[in-house]
Image (cartoon, rainbow, N blue to C red; front, side, top):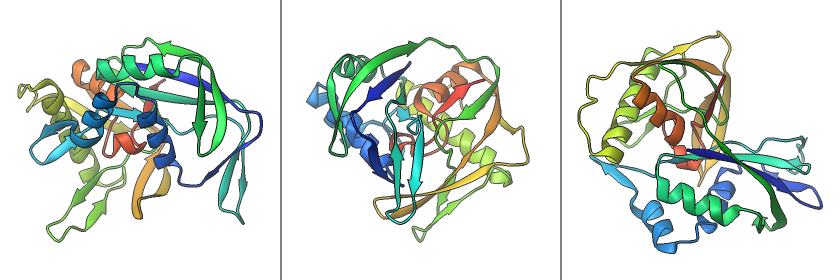
Length: 240
């Protein structure tokens, strides 16, 4: 389940380069049911030691310029934001909350001018384009985080393992342990994106991929995001 909102503002929207947390906060603040917001933020859906929020979102889409001196990205009105989730309660609450109402982003007054519910079903062989960077990582015993590029053989393994864990966390179903799933590169050029979130450096990648395998698992990737840190604005993609 996903929707795209059009957001308009009178003046330009000035944001720091790393604005993921601002958009994440925007989403949480606009959940009407505060118990639901606390559940998603504090608990989510657990599997082993991991907690999954089961939503993701795109980078802002629209015209922008870069102010290198201020380290700001300046968007012109309007912009669009894609929000996606497999959790129906979250999806319904947030979409109704945002529908035709005044909002605020980083202190800028704005309003939602339109909302499109996107009704798409991915196929068992599906080409995708990232709307926010996909990140694949492993946490070592000494708590260091190692990130893997799409060219590293561990990238595919980590993407698949992460997706299976999300499936188990949300559906409470262990039947997908040996599921057929693969992510394939379709280019030799992927754009590396270095982001900062709460002082931590996150390495992600933009570009096109092909997903192959179990259609139900691919649908979960489409709804909840692929790779890690989805609720921080990573792993959202569109079908192409």
